[in-house]
Image (cartoon, rainbow, N blue to C red; front, side, top):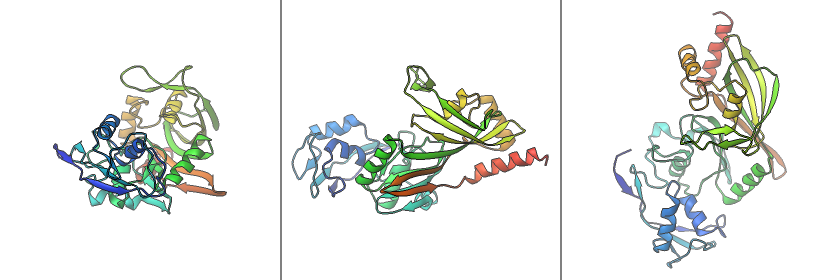
Amino acid sequence: MTGREDFSPVRTLTVDSEHSGRRLDNLLGSLLTGLPVGRIYSMIRRGEVRLNGRRCRAHSRVAEGDRLRLPPVRLGGGDAPGAPQTRRSEALSGRILHRDRSLIVLDKPAGLAVHGGSNQGAGGVIERLRAELGEDTLQLVHRLDRDTSGVLLIARRHSALRRWHDLLRSRRVRKTYRLLVHGDWPDSRRRVEQPLRRGVDLSGDVQVSPAGAPAVSEFELISRYASGYSELLARPRTGRTHQLRVHATSAGCPIVGDARYGDAELNRRSRRALGLRRMFLHAESIAATVDGERTEFSAPLPDELRDCLKRLQKRDAGQ
């Protein structure tokens, strides 16, 4: 961050077939990620956004070939939309697992939010990829928590975004996560069905509540370690915020390194004993049947998580 306010340049874009038919406010929200919604509507009302040279309304529908003029936009931290300041050594394009006409599959690193914000001076995943690849219309298919690593799907075409959203809504996408938890996981397989909702306090933490939305997670034991840890696979059957983290904690086995829902003292011990300074939660794979073909994308376990497991194995072996 530079501590000053910069302006993005005036941009004139041509609407392609992928975005034809979208509402103007919806399209601007995807192009100007991180800009408050109120600011977007204000720009439209004041005539700062022009569609084919004319004033327009938020509910206007764009068509292929339309010319859209976007005004200069002021952002804190000196980061213009789609142009975050990214060091070459941090390039995300080198973490792309798969790329085709419609989709990018990224191996997201831990510690990076998927969307930029006031505390993301270099932007989040989507802003940085848009800048690196020169593709302003990239869209997140789904989200991962900041401290979760692994498979992240990004749509290059609006048709792909709709297709994957339909699959997710109908629960036809199989997500698998690898995690390490504190304690001895009691069952080889366990299905956790506990409704979740945001708490009413200022923290906004997700809580188990009878008044919450239905949430289902399936856990499978991989290994128990004598030093008091368990390695698991987890498959969320619903997609609630922080679902696996809250369900693991509610089962009495919080995820190692989870600063929000875990145990602070246990996390301190883990940092000393295992040298792990992040949450041990990794999105290992995503699978679905797309256009009649079974598709699966996988991301390898990061080195720091692999090293953590090796330390546990050595401790169990008495080395």
